[in-house]
Image 1: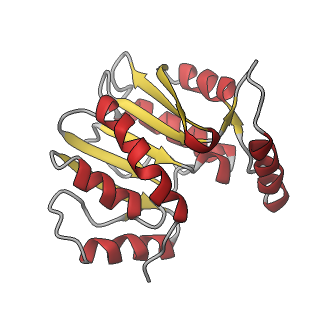
Image 2 (image 1 turned 45 degrees about the vertical axis):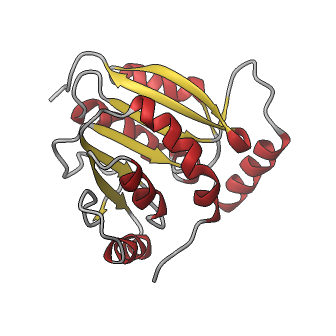
Length: 202
């Protein structure tokens, strides 16, 4: 029932180092597309003052998350919830930060726009939406591995693919979010941080 995603072993610590600078000191972090659940447990242990809410669309992923949760003794992580980022509005409230690791390129663009729109609706002023994954950037030569990965993704599903940072920035700005940080990460990934400058729209 438990899944293992090898990338989580490699990237959990580097991501957590950035989260330590970007997450609030307390409150609820909604994780979108939690996958196996290994990130959720790692981050819940690393940030005991934050309440972690994992989510995923896939029922097998939800089962894996909860299997890890059952074997842990962490009081600050909730049972997983099923959530489709593309279907808005979401049935969640009282969110102080949103984290999404490795979803935007392995889903339709509607999942990215749903994620950004709901972050704009739900997050308090100044609260972060944190995105991790591979991106293409204007005037930055893409790595061969990312070019190959993009071709592989699009061959599996034409609606998938590595996104351009400019496109993410533009849609975020339409929704009232502004990019506040960009971090270069291992294996040709980035962390992008967006913040709600005007407060929730609803």
